[in-house]
Image (tube, rainbow, N blue to C red):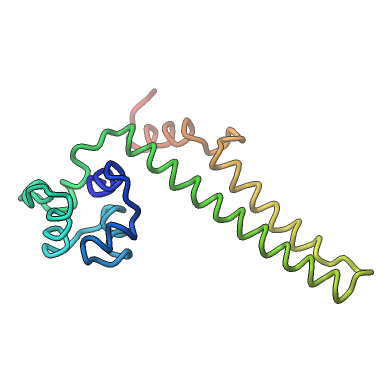
Length: 157
């Protein structure tokens, strides 16, 4: 998370950071998701951000220190932005694929509109995805998750 925070503070994309550090975009994505990073990768990132290498590592493990300096609100906000990004990607895929299928349907068999069935089915999935991202339905929302965690830990609210 610290790497992502530093990258965003500099206004860099993951691709720009990869170009500057000589690390693959995939590696940067894994590090930002909290997976462990090699010493070489952390040294490259420390050099790019012009910070001390030791600020990216600790005795208890590299991964635990990556969340240091990032508040819980920032972690939640970043997770919500990731959910939004996945939803918008899903929406764009729906529009492109269903649009292509519609054109194909109208060109090949204009009297039989079979495209409504995949559009309807996928549309239901898209609506469910939207409801989870935008908390449209109260089921399985943040409050429900909190109650379930408290219940699992044996705490009462």
